[in-house]
Image (cartoon, rainbow, N blue to C red):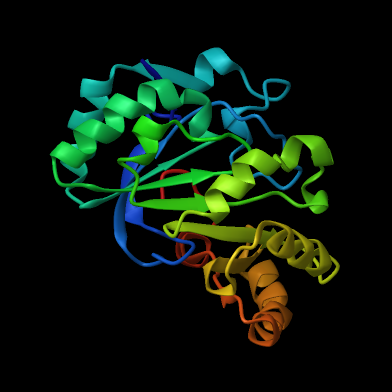
Length: 235
């Protein structure tokens, strides 16, 4: 049984939109947002998945059996499915049958992760794309929690894994470059994304971040869903 985020309506946070970030930005996708997270980022835009000092887990978490999740995803009508969180790999034992079911229905699967947990082999066999977002010091997490060498080494070796770094200031870039070099991540699989939940902040940070991407040979990605709908749940 999977623990999903619950929308204010009481429904599980399974919704159809477009992928707003990364190499598949703009692709129509059905999102499955799981609850629980192993990291606590200061700029997190989904704190209701883990911050039990501010949110009531009884109100924010809904438990669903895998067949029910598959049924709801099928109703979304898209081929691309994005499993997000929170940190999905905290629930990877139950993700294995979900991913297998999605593949049997012809779905393409993306999993979003912080890159701190090594994936199960049975799960990785079904995943088409890993969206790995290693956290930097600016996230507020301790280094030992946010950087797990065994997991990052594994992801760096997967051709379908893309490393998406959330950047708050130019000072973050030295840490990005150090980590990319440490794990041998090809530049074409590195993306830099401005942190921000408003169009004004994204515009300001994008202006200088695009130039850094050009200089370093990394990809730039914005947050399309924020530009289109603002910081709104279920979009």
